[in-house]
Length: 279
Image (cartoon, rainbow, N blue to C red):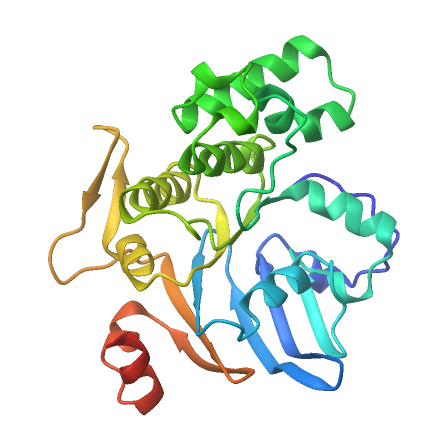
């Protein structure tokens, strides 16, 4: 992780290389007098993928915005790579966000920019040479198999292609953490599978720490039960009865974190809500 030169006076224990990618400590937030998240605590370890599940409107996207510093909690503390996001200035947050990639709901591309400029936007903000930007944009687009769309505009792309461009934009800086906010939302099942395959590829090719919000159980369990084979370049099912050891689950319900654990423990839980939710 690069030296962020943050102004925040961070204790040495908070910037140790082994500090979790994300840590929530007793975090609560509400809007207009209504509690949304109530005393939430969990971690995303380095190289780990946490899949965040829960009914619609339960606060999953709010949780991602808290991790990114877009929202401040009413109480509790949030750390990203040991830095206390919940107490940072906007200037320090801007620097820290350079280590993150974000895939927003619906992709959130700039309609007036070409694919090249959408993907390379953050590099353009850093005033890198055009030749370097072009090289890195093509590399990111090749990863999502869309290098041929370089000069197209978002309106010329299908929904699935726009989402793949959004992933390319998120990974172009080779971030240490990626936040995925419902990356398959609004897509048909076949296209959704293509997007989840890219999420798996990113996880296994780069080992990037990730927090993935999804409303599709089939997407979540595909991530847990498949891996990217670097030798064949293909997504493959893991042997029956095994799951990816770096992938685990969080489940929100009525503002509470009602599950934090492995795929095996989730599917074998006796909790009445979880059994109904997974049915």
